[in-house]
Image (tube, rainbow, N blue to C red; front, top):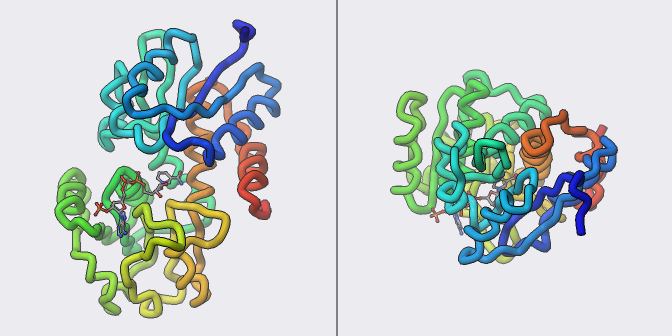
Length: 284
Ligand code: NAP
């Protein structure tokens, strides 16, 4: 039986065995000498309502929610934070005395990682490929960072149009997927973000005029993998600066840790644990 003083947090997903979140959250509890534990639970879609109710029934501090539950979870909480409401998706559920708060730390996580990478987006053109939850979070982040022309491109064009409409005041443009093959358009981009779920070698990223991009164009993949992703590989070959979504995962996790535990997250400890688990060198 758990000690009633122990903070219990979790991540719900299906599948979940690959999740690196437990490693970084448990490292943070250890470093802060907080009695706490963060556990991965494989939760099927039909069991999600029960799992969400358990957060309250068991007195957990909260739970992260990952694929495929981010949209459904938004319907199961008592209140939504502003980002979760805008995105219609929740990636963390915080157990508050007033009820369950659904929040979304993905956009803030990406924002912090892009800043940490030293990217200035002021007046730069940004291209986001993908119009799911990750694409929406990426648009929020780059607009907050002051990007100039922002374009979203998606395999299913109507989905990109519907997403752009939600940013009415910020003016997000949409183009068809073949814009990726247009050298003039690609040559204007300062940052290209992959927010599609194309990641592994058995999937192919839509054809893109990588060589037409400017030498200082930055390529960012929301996905991460042990080896460079299919999206990043051609950019790396050309010597372009690149990053994958491990840093975003770190920062969205650190923000969730703070929401769950109401203490400042030890980001460096979490980074070390995460990068070690992912088999990455820890950059200074
Ligand atoms: P999602 O809502 O399921 O959206 C998937 C997107 O990928 C859609 O735009 C879809 O286009 C597109 N897509 C799928 N297969 C494609 C293909 N073969 N060619 C072109 N486009 C394709 O997923 P999501 O939640 O946005 O997540 C997207 C990626 O971001 C995932 O890899 C996820 O792990 C990653 N992510 C990372 C973090 C992090 O912390 N690093 C956070 C959030 C998400 P259609 O609309 O045409 O289907």
